[in-house]
Length: 286
Image (cartoon, rainbow, N blue to C red; front, side):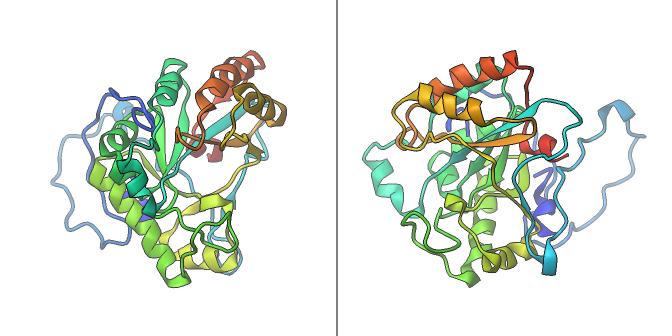
C-alpha cells in the first residue's frame, strides 16, 4: 500500500498561520521504493515517547476495489463527530487566484484553533501549491490532519457538477501528484485518505485508485455551505443531521463558501452542549 509509506512524512491558510512546527520524520513518498537502509542501533526507546500509531485504513472492498468510508456506525454510546473541510482549488483556477480570488480561509482556521476543534482538511494539490505556507502550517499542527482531495479537483466519474473529467489512466497519477505537493510544502500530518471531487465516483475510479492503498472518505451529513449566504441556515442543517459517529462535509474556500466560519461559531458550542466531542477522521475510523 504505497500511500501508507508517506505517513510519518488547511487553517492558517485554508487558514490561519502560526502553528508550531515539528521536525519531519523520515518518510517515503507514495509510489516510491522502500527505504534504503535501517537506522543504526541506539538507546532503548522510552515507552512514554513512542511514535503515534499509523492512521487506520479499511481493507480493500470486493475485487480489491478501494474501500469507502462515510461514518462510524458503532460508537459504543460515545458522542463523536468529525468535521471535515475541503480545500478546493481546481487546476485551471490559477488566473482567478492571480486576480485576487481567495481559495483559502484564514479566519475559519483561526476560529477552529481558538475553539480547539480537531479536524481533517481534504486538500487539493493545486491548493497546496497556491498556499504552501498555509499547507505547511496546517500540516504541522497536531490539531489538523491533511487528506487528499486530488491534485486537479477534476471529476473521477461523469457527470459531476460540470467538472472536467479525468481519464482512468490519469486518476492514480493525479492523486499521487497531490501527495507530492503536500510533501513539497512541508506538511507531515498527512493521512492515507482520499475524497473524490464532488463526491463523484464509480467502480472504475475505485479500481484505478486501488494500487495507492488509500481509503475513500465520503460523509453522512452535508452542511450545504457551498455558495451559501446564511451561516445560520448552514448551522441548522448540520445540527439537524449530526448523529453519534457522523462525518460532516464543509469547505474552507472563502470565494465558494463565505459563511462557513459563521456557521462553525454556532455549530461547535451547540454540539458540545449536547455532549459531542470533535475528532479527526483517523480517530473516527479507529
